[in-house]
Length: 374
Figure (cartoon, rainbow, N blue to C red):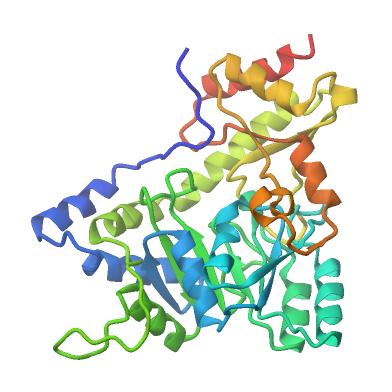
C-alpha cells in the first residue's frame, strides 16, 4: 500500500515559474528580487507592515528574542504544549523558559495562568523579559487577555505562528498582534519553501535590524565591518520563489485541510471515546493538522495502540507534542500547571492532514480507525 503521510508538501505548479526566473537571472543567492517580493506579498497577506524572510522559523524566533532584548538570566513565559523549536531559541540567548499550561478551548497558552504568573513575577521583582504564546496546530491562542497583561507591564509579546498561517483571531491573522510574529515554511507546513521562515512586525526599525542581524550584521561600509554579532539567516532567492507560488494558493490549502477535518468528523466522530481538538469561538482554525483525542476506556484502545494500528496500514500518525515541561532537556525549568498539556499528550493523535490527500486516502485512514473498534 502507498504510504499516507501526516503532512507532505503540496506544490501548485506556480512555483516553477519563479524558480526558473531565479535561474534565468542567476539570482542564486540569499538575497534577490524574489526575497523582496515574497516579503512584501507575505506582509500584505497577513496584514503586517513589514516582513523579513529568513532561513527558518527557528531563526526568526532567535532574532525576535534578540530584538526584544532578551538575554542571559532572563525569564520567558512560553507555552508548554509545543514543539521544541519554540523553546530552543530561548536557550540560545541564555534565558530561562517558564512553561505555562494549556486551556481547553484552543489547547493554547492558558491566559488565566499567564496573568497569575506575570503578576506573581512582578511582585517578586522578576518581571518576565518576554511572553511567547504558540498558536498550535493551526489555531490562535486567546490573545486579548495575553496582550492586556503584557501591555500593563510593558512585556514584549513574541507570537509563534509557525503552525497557524491562514488562521484568524477576531478577523486578524495571529502573528500580527505582538511586537513580532514568527512563521515557518518547513516542508510539513500549510505552505512550504522546503525550509524557511518569516519574521513580521509593524515596527520598521525592528525588521531593518533583523535583516542586518540575519546577514552577519555587516555595517554599511565598502569593507567588511561588524559592530555586533550576526547570523547567516537570510532566505535564498530560489526558495523565496517557491514561497511566492505557494502563497498564491494558501486559501485553497486551508480549505482542503478543513475538508479533511470535516471528513474525519463525519466518518469517525460517532465512535465512543473519540473527540476532536475544538475550534475556539474567536477565530478560524486552519486544521493544519487534524487532531483527535482517544479515551482508552470508552474507545477500547489507547492512543499508542491506535497509532500502531495505523502504521501497520502504512499510515503515518503522530502523538500530540510532548509538553516541554516533560522533556528531559528542560527538566528543572519552572512550570505553571502542566496537567492539561500532559493529558492532551497522553490522549492526542494527529491524523494525516495534507492538502493533497484524496478521498481514497481519507477512507483508508477512517477505516483503519474504525477497524480497531470491531
